[in-house]
Image (cartoon, rainbow, N blue to C red; front, side, top):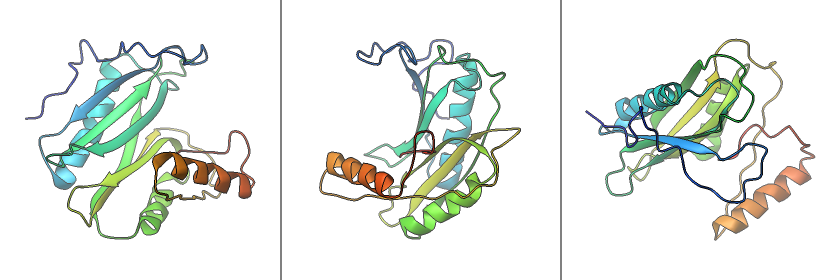
Length: 189
């Protein structure tokens, strides 16, 4: 069985990060590395990251993001969650997720599928990556269970470039061009 990279009793959550200001305090993180591949491995990683957050005493409103990635050598699923217990406690942590792996479609098609999963939910994070096969991907939407957001339109933009910084700059330009305002960005992955 997979072993969490950070034991629940002592999460690798005490990272000393400089320059993060006092709005969210010092962010902490937990991560889960699955020993399985495919849908079973991705679902296990998603379920275990939620369990690690609960075991770390994280409450609703304190999760900053959850990210899907994979082990470069084995392509086994990894989920990483960032949180800050300085953020307001909005009640017990009850996270759900929808996701899929082995997706053989364009990223645009995957984003559209994720929009359907996210609609009407109180979304925490939308995240995906190649599942290591070369032609397939995995994508997950994490959300707080219970009362969700309205069924307003969810849109997405994508930026590709020769470097991560150029892709980020392109994304910011697209958001500005689309007229996106403060508080309207649901997720960046």
